[in-house]
Image 1 (cartoon, rainbow, N blue to C red):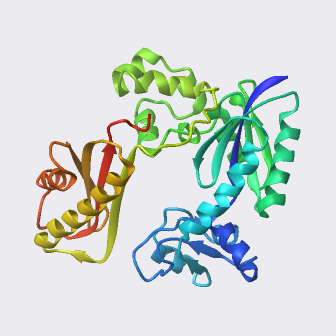
Image 2: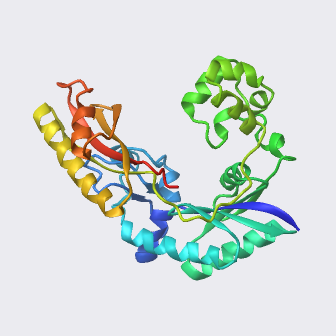
Length: 337
């Protein structure tokens, strides 16, 4: 018996939820995002595999998705339906008696003790399918990092194992952003240092990267480049670290007085919602996305109330530029502990 971490990831989740409710959509390109209207501003939450085949992907503007796939069926995100289906899936995972660490609607880590993790994973996927009619992909690793990355190699509806022994065979020649936690910006910084593969990152001098990228970030990047990661699956119920509201405007807001009024409105809404949680707020952050996509955030420590802090944060922004999105976020003092 050995300890393994499984990463369970529901395939095309929000789209799959809609297919459950509308079987006639099976086999068609389906895009879920925003309020389901591609003529309005919004981004793709999930694209079905049929939509992905024509270049539609998560995070893409709905208007772009509509141009790439005029025949796509566009639907809004139904949060209540997704909550309900996700709860069913997580109940199946917990019924194994293993610790389950929920990451979101559609994914979770499961810590298992078994001599045959592939068999365990296949049985678990079959149980999810039987209970919910949903497919899932499962990554197997010696730690969370390996399991999370492995899932991508198992999609769709498959199982894949990635270990320290196979790490370089699978990832060694791939770019660093093949690793969970490394994005395009960090990959670009590494490339500027001559590090263009996972193998090169693993062999890098931690002290050098500490000097170039920071005393914490630099050595951490070398560790994940070597496939190191957390092995403990924490079943503690998730508690959000922040709570916020944001809105994307169909027409750019050019009057700064309206911007101030909208930030005040969002702040009041956030204040009322966080008050219901009973959790103390430490900081308030205001987010402004200028047209077309220049996003700026400023935050201040909470001294009075949320609305007052939002006004203070907004004063750091440059008025006069057209605004397409506004957001207000409260950060909890207890950080979810």
